Image (cartoon, rainbow, N blue to C red; front, side, top):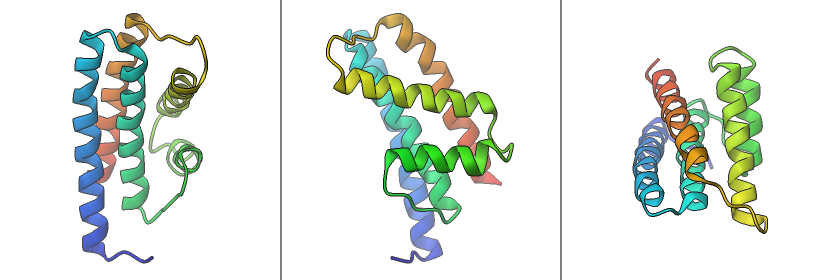
Length: 132
């Protein structure tokens, strides 16, 4: 399906709003001790932002792995995002997967508190790219 420019703008805006709202959810999960869920929401906040960036640039992917690969290929390797952003997104992708699917994996408060500001920075960096 081919999107019009207006549709693309609306989807990008919606994804960024979703990223910011999902980031807010993390605070409640953190306060209530739901650390695996907090990591899940951190990942999804970044996923929505990464997906917005790809869509804004005319790139549509069908999977989480596809988003990760295209983000690295088109934005990290080209210097538009830092290598640290690429590593962070991959790390968050892996932590979300293990927390959601692996038995006996329990993230802790320290993990959430380490990841949260990095997620905020990741989303902020994507919003800057979207403004260019």
